[in-house]
Image: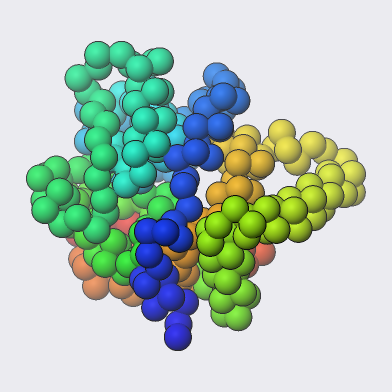
Length: 273
């Protein structure tokens, strides 16, 4: 059984509750993190502002990327499958853009074609580290390509396929999401290991890697560890597989950043022809 088959067969009882993790992250949200998220989005898209651009955040999670886009003057539509993630995004909207008509927040799924059809087209479709958790990654990717307007931009980040290592991690994540005992075992083993490895790397490189991590879209290393260990369903793809699949939908590749360590996401920026 391939990892994609395994991911597609994952039931609701084995789905990681991403929203709870994002809710904890919001307690540590600062202006510095928001500015880092803005700068990351600017660098990614090669622009300084998004005035009037229609921006959809597919799988908005904490809502930080949506907030960054709105602060850059985009017209934003955020949606997520997880109700708690929707609440997190709504919380950020209430904090910074209360009653703002240029930012909509809804519950929705990248696999719900009728919902996506109701949204129309967007100048920028942004989906970072999301579609490989839907349970049907290739269908989700196909669906979001339909949201991109002519000459619009698709930003997508998908976990890199590491072969046997990815299948190993699929099993770990499945155990984590199987119940309380599985979650305790996985966290007890891996969190101390990650912490010690990060501390040693900080000493060797003579800089605070925990602080440096905020420069990655304003994110938190600890909350990303929880996300990584629990993120299930879980699917992966090689960079060339994503490239060929999206190219066949009428896109050209604008930018590509592959993960150096093998872990993490390959990052793509596609332009609709």
